Length: 126
Image (cartoon, rainbow, N blue to C red; front, side, top):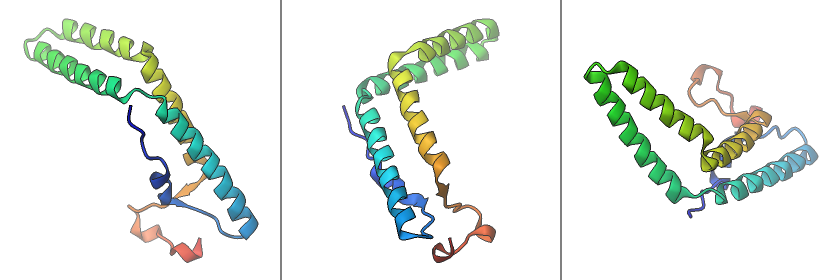
């Protein structure tokens, strides 16, 4: 099982450094959440997810093949069956929980908008 690095991803978070106390509290909270995220991700069987990904690619190819043969109903049926299997998969459910932690973290912090030069502020002005 691979450990996925979480802390390097947090380097893109822009802090509101209006006061040292606020920044310290924000930093501590972020570190706690990052640790939660890392613990969550450590519980994910990445080898299993890779096998599942391979299966998904196979199903995708099969569905495309059925579509090209005009077997739309069969293609839809197979796609929906696989989607239901994925939806009920315990490892996928764990991964969703980790994603929920990440979304919670993201919603609490302002991220730098690197795609929008016209609105970009200098890091010292935030």
